[in-house]
Image (cartoon, rainbow over all chains, first blue to last red; front, top):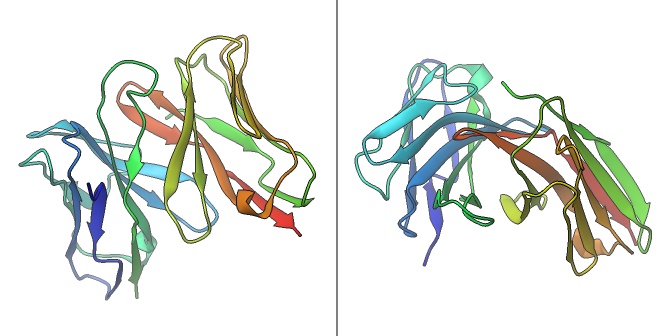
Length: 116
Length: 109
């Protein structure tokens, strides 16, 4: 199992450009999440999904969009990139099952995005 | 959103010393998770605590959930250089997760 994979690893965008961050998991997890992590800070939830076709806003959704057409993929779309979106983006997944380890989140390696 | 206070923000210790990070919430929690993130890496799940007063150990790491389920702590005994990284607590409210700001641990050999 590859776990959670993200592409690209690094990207530099100009202000106003758009891009899609890709996230794929091969663990058949229902729950998937997108976080951003600013330097020296914790993770902030952008969007999440509890299954294919279902998405919902997290704590900081403005400037982003997501879709979940399959269980495996959960792409994050940035429209009109702004310098405030410079951050490290992490995708994560979990099985969502009840129980002591049901909510364990598995994280991808991250995408480091700079908007200039 | 949920407020999760984590202290201290930074901690420098000599190798062999103990280390503790604390996580506090203003509301009663259903559970709390702990993650470790190595420099340049991604968060890795350590443990989830569910029961009031719960104490769990993983080798030199001891995790505790407060009796009122509003706070939690992670204690590392006799730190090693492999313990370097940032330790985060995370709580979930419904389907959303809220992470603390983390405690960055530096271990001086």
